[in-house]
Image (cartoon, rainbow, N blue to C red; front, side):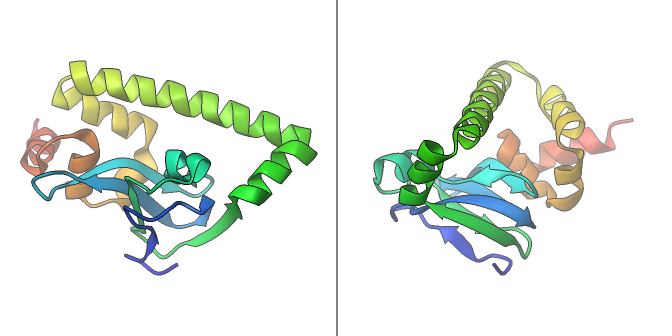
Length: 158
């Protein structure tokens, strides 16, 4: 997949659960003011989709595109269900993956509602140092729910 190419656009039905073999993708929603609100960065070894759309075959609310040129592995809903049914270890793998994802999303939601901008940025540096090096500052700001100027201020603080 080329840089800036879409893996999924809002309004389409998500046909694939996507594994990032190489590269970097983001999922996002455009808010009512036309601003991109990033919900996830997915680099090597991560899965990405609009999971509600994938499971329920409803129109996606998220858009997914490549920040970097990427190699992806994709599995259709039918093959995903077959994999879970026929390979028990994969059902366990995905269950653990979803449990960890839910915990991460809960922590992020709590942080977004209670942490200062400095703490949000510090946590990102600690938990996703590779992403911070690979992603432009305005995208990091969008992911953290901050203005790009706030990220600049935090980075330039003595």
